[in-house]
Length: 334
Image: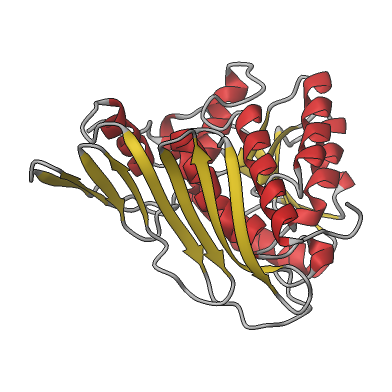
């Protein structure tokens, strides 16, 4: 079973990290340990936080604030790792400075903001991609191979869940409407993007949910329909650590992906005729694969990735916009 390309074979590129939180640390660790790229600068509004991050990840330059980071001539590409509410502003800032951009998922709060960012990128001629790392992982490439080979027949059902337990705290970013909190944009984006990856954009969306005391979505059940025959059944919650598994079922068999389905993991194919086999080729970390994709596409002069295209990002956001509309979640300023 062929895997995706080794991230260490991607060209070198110089990264600037915008934001110094947990996901930025995981990304920096993966880039530093598993690619040929360089981490050249980090920017944070907090000087101490920036300096600690730089020390932890061997980054030579720190910036207080984000404008200096995006204007740093050492930086080729900016990784935006701030809360969802800030993605549009920070991506536009980097694009205006002529930098390529990788924006943490969810790309923006909504499709309208994404269209604004992508229009700016188109005008500037820079590369922009949503950091949906799952799309670039070896097991996902292998699942696509299984489906394309016809081994499970016609796909008729996709199931995926992503729940994590977060105790209620109105100041936490996932409970704060001003920071575009809620389960969907942070956790639910994974099952929604997963369904889009294998089935495309749905013909209809149906969602039910329960809101938190702060008015963001705490838990959601989502059904995406694809014509008369095929559905994706998805769920997400802030209130429990769920199995975080996924399954793709076809007329001839099922692929069951172990938790966490969106991270490097294994899967099992069980055919209707009784045959079965397992894919289990683990890799460490995982974020290096999306970083390598950026480096390769930038080197070839592309402005988007075919595996996470601008159209893909917009389609996922439109689905999530419809989910939020149905359950009544509106962020300040929308």
